[in-house]
Each structure stands twice: as C-alpha cells, then as structure tokens.
Amino acid sequence: MRRLNRRKTLSLVKELDAFPKVPDSYVETSASGGTVSLIAFTTMALLTIMEFSVYQDTWMKYEYEVDKDFSSKLRINIDITVAMKCHSDDSFDSSAKCKNFVL
View 1 (cartoon, rainbow, N blue to C red):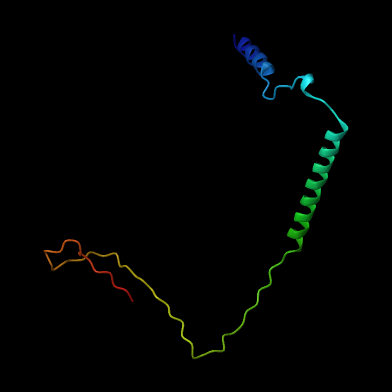
View 2 (view 1 turned 90 degrees about the vertical axis):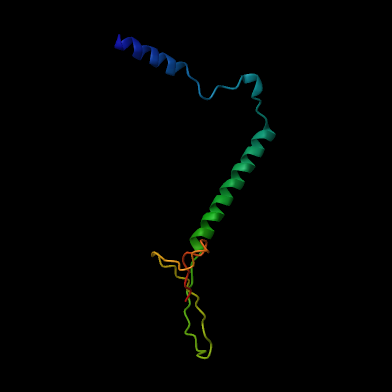
C-alpha cells in the first residue's frame, strides 16, 4: 500500500510542470533579436563591473579636530520622567496626578 502512494506521488510530481513550455510557433529567432540580446547583456555586464569598481574604490576618511573656541557653550536639554507613585493634593484636578520634572 505504501509503495502505491509513492508511485502516485512520483507520477504527480513528474506531471507537474511549473514552467510550461512555449509553443514553437511563438518562438522566432532573428538577427535583430540576437543583437538586442547581446547589447542588453553587454550593457548589464558593464554596469555590474562599473558598480563593483566604484564599490571597491570608495573609502571613508575620518578627520577629528579640537574645538578651540572656549567661549561658546553647548546647550544640552535633558527630559527625565521618573517612574514613581505620585500623590496629588488637588482632589479636583484628576488629570494632573503627577508632575514631570524637566532639568
């Protein structure tokens, strides 16, 4: 019994054609079609080679410099929210249970 199921499975897989063949009447070879194919292939090959050469030749140049302007100030804003229980003294305002403190 088991072999029978395998045979059915094998025959089903053999009959399955994921890429059906195009009828011969639809395929027509010509010199102009071959020329277009060669030009397209050559263009794709050249573009691939050029992109690879650009990839090979690129490099990053890092430069670091000390800031000599001591009079300038850098402003840094830090927002901190502390996750802790808050007790509101104002029983009328339920929307403002906790106040966020911004440094």
